[in-house]
Amino acid sequence: DTGVSQNPRHKITKRGQNVTFRCDPISEHNRLYWYRQTLGQGPEFLTYFQNEAQLEKSRLLSDRFSAERPKGSFSTLEIQRTEQGDSAMYLCASSLWTGAGEKLFFGSGTQLSVL
Amino acid sequence: AQTVTQSQPEMSVQEAETVTLSCTYDTSENNYYLFWYKQPPSRQMILVIRQEAYKQQNATENRFSVNFQKAAKSFSLKISDSQLGDTAMYFCAFMRKGGSEKLVFGKGTKLTVNP
Image (tube, rainbow over all chains, first blue to last red):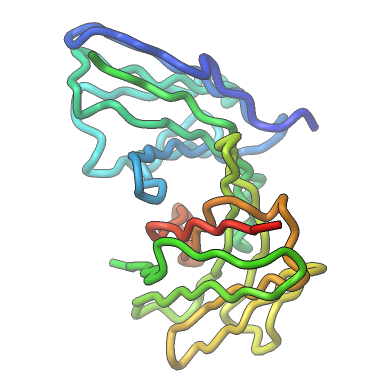
Protein backbone atom coordinates (compact mmCIF):
# COMPACT_ATOMS: atom_id res chain seq x y z
CA ASP A 1 0.00 0.00 0.00
CA THR A 2 1.92 3.00 -1.27
CA GLY A 3 -0.90 5.49 -0.93
CA VAL A 4 -2.56 7.67 -3.55
CA SER A 5 -0.05 9.33 -5.84
CA GLN A 6 -0.66 12.49 -7.84
CA ASN A 7 1.50 14.08 -10.48
CA PRO A 8 2.63 16.72 -10.95
CA ARG A 9 2.63 18.38 -7.53
CA HIS A 10 2.60 21.81 -9.09
CA LYS A 11 1.63 23.07 -12.52
CA ILE A 12 1.95 26.60 -13.79
CA THR A 13 0.37 27.35 -17.14
CA LYS A 14 -0.76 30.24 -19.23
CA ARG A 15 -4.38 30.98 -19.82
CA GLY A 16 -5.71 29.08 -22.81
CA GLN A 17 -3.32 26.16 -22.51
CA ASN A 18 -4.39 22.58 -21.85
CA VAL A 19 -3.20 20.70 -18.77
CA THR A 20 -3.45 17.09 -17.66
CA PHE A 21 -3.08 15.65 -14.18
CA ARG A 22 -2.57 12.05 -13.22
CA CYS A 23 -3.74 10.09 -10.21
CA ASP A 24 -2.59 6.61 -9.22
CA PRO A 25 -4.95 5.20 -6.58
CA ILE A 26 -4.21 2.59 -3.99
CA SER A 27 -4.04 -0.69 -5.85
CA GLU A 28 -7.28 -2.67 -5.87
CA HIS A 29 -9.34 0.36 -4.87
CA ASN A 30 -12.37 0.29 -7.12
CA ARG A 31 -13.50 3.89 -6.62
CA LEU A 32 -11.61 7.01 -7.56
CA TYR A 33 -12.74 10.57 -6.87
CA TRP A 34 -11.59 13.98 -8.06
CA TYR A 35 -12.07 17.06 -5.90
CA ARG A 36 -11.12 20.70 -6.31
CA GLN A 37 -10.03 22.90 -3.42
CA THR A 38 -9.69 26.66 -3.62
CA LEU A 39 -8.05 28.85 -1.01
CA GLY A 40 -9.99 29.02 2.23
CA GLN A 41 -12.50 26.40 1.18
CA GLY A 42 -13.04 22.72 1.73
CA PRO A 43 -12.65 20.32 -1.18
CA GLU A 44 -15.56 20.20 -3.63
CA PHE A 45 -16.56 17.05 -5.48
CA LEU A 46 -15.94 17.01 -9.22
CA THR A 47 -16.46 13.44 -10.41
CA TYR A 48 -15.96 9.81 -9.52
CA PHE A 49 -15.32 6.46 -11.13
CA GLN A 50 -16.22 2.97 -10.14
CA ASN A 51 -13.67 0.83 -11.89
CA GLU A 52 -13.48 2.35 -15.38
CA ALA A 53 -17.01 3.80 -15.42
CA GLN A 54 -17.51 7.49 -14.70
CA LEU A 55 -20.72 7.45 -12.71
CA GLU A 56 -21.27 11.05 -11.63
CA LYS A 57 -20.09 14.49 -12.63
CA SER A 58 -20.63 17.66 -10.65
CA ARG A 59 -22.07 20.79 -12.23
CA LEU A 60 -18.67 22.31 -11.39
CA LEU A 61 -17.21 20.16 -14.14
CA SER A 62 -17.65 22.29 -17.22
CA ASP A 63 -17.24 20.84 -20.70
CA ARG A 64 -13.63 22.01 -20.67
CA PHE A 65 -12.92 19.34 -18.09
CA SER A 66 -12.64 15.66 -18.93
CA ALA A 67 -11.63 12.73 -16.78
CA GLU A 68 -10.78 9.18 -17.68
CA ARG A 69 -9.91 6.02 -15.88
CA PRO A 70 -8.89 3.50 -18.51
CA LYS A 71 -8.80 -0.10 -17.33
CA GLY A 72 -9.95 0.99 -13.91
CA SER A 73 -6.47 1.81 -12.68
CA PHE A 74 -4.94 5.31 -12.86
CA SER A 75 -7.00 8.34 -13.80
CA THR A 76 -6.32 11.54 -15.69
CA LEU A 77 -8.04 14.88 -15.41
CA GLU A 78 -7.63 17.22 -18.37
CA ILE A 79 -8.56 20.87 -18.45
CA GLN A 80 -8.75 22.45 -21.89
CA ARG A 81 -8.39 26.16 -22.58
CA THR A 82 -7.53 26.93 -18.97
CA GLU A 83 -8.90 30.04 -17.31
CA GLN A 84 -7.63 31.92 -14.28
CA GLY A 85 -10.63 30.65 -12.33
CA ASP A 86 -9.32 27.12 -12.75
CA SER A 87 -6.45 27.92 -10.38
CA ALA A 88 -6.91 25.56 -7.45
CA MET A 89 -5.63 22.40 -5.90
CA TYR A 90 -6.95 19.26 -7.52
CA LEU A 91 -7.22 16.33 -5.15
CA CYS A 92 -7.65 12.68 -5.97
CA ALA A 93 -8.98 10.09 -3.56
CA SER A 94 -9.65 6.38 -3.74
CA SER A 95 -11.59 3.81 -1.76
CA LEU A 96 -12.42 0.15 -1.75
CA TRP A 97 -16.16 0.51 -1.95
CA THR A 98 -18.37 -2.17 -0.47
CA GLY A 99 -21.39 0.02 0.28
CA ALA A 100 -20.59 0.75 3.92
CA GLY A 101 -19.24 4.29 3.87
CA GLU A 102 -15.63 3.39 3.34
CA LYS A 103 -12.87 5.80 4.09
CA LEU A 104 -11.49 7.84 1.25
CA PHE A 105 -7.71 8.02 1.02
CA PHE A 106 -6.41 11.22 -0.50
CA GLY A 107 -3.32 12.11 -2.46
CA SER A 108 -1.29 15.27 -1.86
CA GLY A 109 -2.92 17.06 -4.74
CA THR A 110 -1.82 18.97 -7.82
CA GLN A 111 -1.63 22.74 -7.35
CA LEU A 112 -2.60 24.48 -10.58
CA SER A 113 -1.78 28.13 -11.21
CA VAL A 114 -3.15 29.73 -14.36
CA LEU A 115 -1.38 32.96 -15.29
CA ALA B 1 -28.56 18.83 -0.79
CA GLN B 2 -26.39 18.43 2.24
CA THR B 3 -24.44 21.28 3.79
CA VAL B 4 -21.71 21.27 6.41
CA THR B 5 -20.94 24.31 8.52
CA GLN B 6 -17.81 24.94 10.56
CA SER B 7 -18.32 28.19 12.41
CA GLN B 8 -14.78 28.58 13.76
CA PRO B 9 -12.37 29.71 11.01
CA GLU B 10 -9.40 29.64 13.39
CA MET B 11 -8.62 28.29 16.83
CA SER B 12 -5.56 27.97 18.98
CA VAL B 13 -4.67 25.83 21.98
CA GLN B 14 -1.69 25.37 24.22
CA GLU B 15 0.27 22.17 23.95
CA ALA B 16 -1.12 19.40 26.22
CA GLU B 17 -4.49 21.11 26.59
CA THR B 18 -7.85 20.09 25.16
CA VAL B 19 -9.67 21.79 22.30
CA THR B 20 -13.06 21.21 20.68
CA LEU B 21 -13.86 21.99 17.06
CA SER B 22 -17.50 22.51 16.10
CA CYS B 23 -19.41 21.21 13.10
CA THR B 24 -23.07 21.25 12.20
CA TYR B 25 -24.71 19.78 9.14
CA ASP B 26 -28.02 19.83 7.39
CA THR B 27 -29.57 16.80 5.75
CA SER B 28 -32.88 15.03 5.31
CA GLU B 29 -31.10 11.68 5.06
CA ASN B 30 -31.23 9.10 7.79
CA ASN B 31 -28.36 6.88 6.73
CA TYR B 32 -25.06 8.66 6.56
CA TYR B 33 -21.54 8.91 7.88
CA LEU B 34 -19.58 11.81 9.32
CA PHE B 35 -15.86 12.33 9.17
CA TRP B 36 -13.15 14.62 10.42
CA TYR B 37 -10.15 15.05 8.14
CA LYS B 38 -6.89 16.80 8.94
CA GLN B 39 -4.93 18.72 6.30
CA PRO B 40 -1.42 19.69 7.45
CA PRO B 41 0.82 22.00 5.40
CA SER B 42 1.83 18.98 3.33
CA ARG B 43 -1.73 19.27 1.92
CA GLN B 44 -2.61 15.60 2.16
CA MET B 45 -6.03 15.01 3.67
CA ILE B 46 -5.71 12.52 6.50
CA LEU B 47 -8.69 10.79 8.08
CA VAL B 48 -8.92 11.51 11.79
CA ILE B 49 -12.16 9.83 12.79
CA ARG B 50 -15.37 8.39 11.34
CA GLN B 51 -18.86 8.15 12.82
CA GLU B 52 -21.75 6.04 11.57
CA ALA B 53 -25.03 7.90 12.04
CA TYR B 54 -26.94 4.83 13.18
CA LYS B 55 -24.51 4.25 16.04
CA GLN B 56 -25.30 6.18 19.18
CA GLN B 57 -21.88 5.57 20.68
CA ASN B 58 -19.42 8.34 19.96
CA ALA B 59 -16.33 7.31 18.00
CA THR B 60 -12.91 7.53 19.64
CA GLU B 61 -9.43 7.25 18.15
CA ASN B 62 -6.69 7.66 20.74
CA ARG B 63 -6.62 11.39 21.64
CA PHE B 64 -9.46 12.21 19.26
CA SER B 65 -13.13 11.79 20.11
CA VAL B 66 -16.39 13.13 18.80
CA ASN B 67 -19.62 14.34 20.33
CA PHE B 68 -22.30 13.25 17.89
CA GLN B 69 -25.74 14.73 18.51
CA LYS B 70 -27.94 13.37 15.73
CA ALA B 71 -31.09 15.28 16.60
CA ALA B 72 -29.18 18.54 16.76
CA LYS B 73 -27.16 17.61 13.65
CA SER B 74 -23.98 18.41 15.48
CA PHE B 75 -20.64 16.63 15.21
CA SER B 76 -17.82 18.18 17.25
CA LEU B 77 -14.24 16.94 17.48
CA LYS B 78 -12.36 16.95 20.77
CA ILE B 79 -8.59 16.74 20.74
CA SER B 80 -7.06 15.86 24.10
CA ASP B 81 -3.44 16.40 25.10
CA SER B 82 -2.85 18.57 22.04
CA GLN B 83 0.50 18.13 20.32
CA LEU B 84 2.43 20.46 18.03
CA GLY B 85 1.85 18.00 15.21
CA ASP B 86 -1.88 18.56 15.50
CA THR B 87 -1.43 21.99 13.92
CA ALA B 88 -3.42 21.77 10.67
CA MET B 89 -6.66 22.58 8.92
CA TYR B 90 -9.49 20.36 10.12
CA PHE B 91 -12.42 19.59 7.88
CA CYS B 92 -15.74 18.11 8.88
CA ALA B 93 -17.38 16.05 6.13
CA PHE B 94 -20.70 14.34 5.44
CA MET B 95 -21.26 11.22 3.35
CA ARG B 96 -24.69 9.97 2.36
CA LYS B 97 -24.91 6.20 2.40
CA GLY B 98 -25.38 4.68 -1.03
CA GLY B 99 -24.80 6.07 -4.50
CA SER B 100 -21.58 7.95 -5.01
CA GLU B 101 -20.77 8.18 -1.31
CA LYS B 102 -18.93 11.39 -2.06
CA LEU B 103 -17.81 13.62 0.77
CA VAL B 104 -19.34 17.04 1.34
CA PHE B 105 -16.90 19.20 3.26
CA GLY B 106 -17.17 22.24 5.48
CA LYS B 107 -14.87 25.22 5.02
CA GLY B 108 -12.50 24.05 7.67
CA THR B 109 -11.03 25.26 10.95
CA LYS B 110 -7.39 26.24 11.18
CA LEU B 111 -6.00 24.87 14.44
CA THR B 112 -2.72 26.09 15.85
CA VAL B 113 -1.10 24.32 18.78
CA ASN B 114 1.23 26.64 20.65
CA PRO B 115 4.26 25.42 22.62
